[in-house]
Image 1 (cartoon, rainbow, N blue to C red):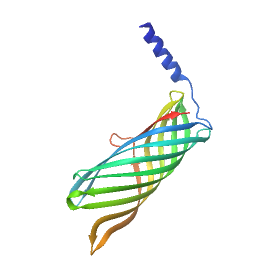
Image 2 (cartoon, helix red, strand yellow):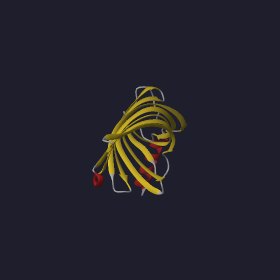
Image 3 (tube, helix red, strand yellow):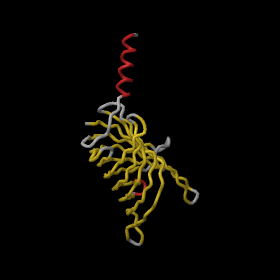
Image 4 (cartoon, rainbow, N blue to C red):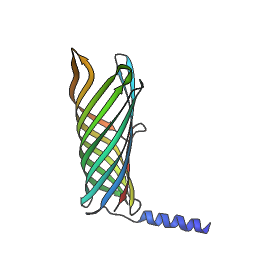
Length: 201
């Protein structure tokens, strides 16, 4: 029992030490995210579930200021039984604001490119999408140990431009559309999660 109290005491004393994020620090992270959307069109409701996994590297160019590069691989499932996959990358500039010991709010403007491919075997259909977006993301970052921490995105404001091409044709011409959109996304809900576990060195 005495050993257990000593172990807990060491753990809390370690967590109480303040670890600053200073110029020259590096983060190597594993990113995980989930997303669920429901849309209705012409009386038909469609549910989309997505997940992604990726890696990230960040370097602090100033105290509490970091540049980040992220690469991810995604998978999407539709309620009709179709699925898709994709990959992408992003670059961002994170600004950390200390809140409590080892606990920060972070505001990150970033640029993202994502390409994806969706298949519909029943109709021999293949759709391809390229998305370019500029985001402003708010999140939280917690560094309880000297070399390990976790961060989570809570919400983001994004401007997105999409190019969409389908193998389905009209008058012997492939279907192709282009569109832009502005969206405010909640990434801290139970359905939409986006977080990173990172090693600091």
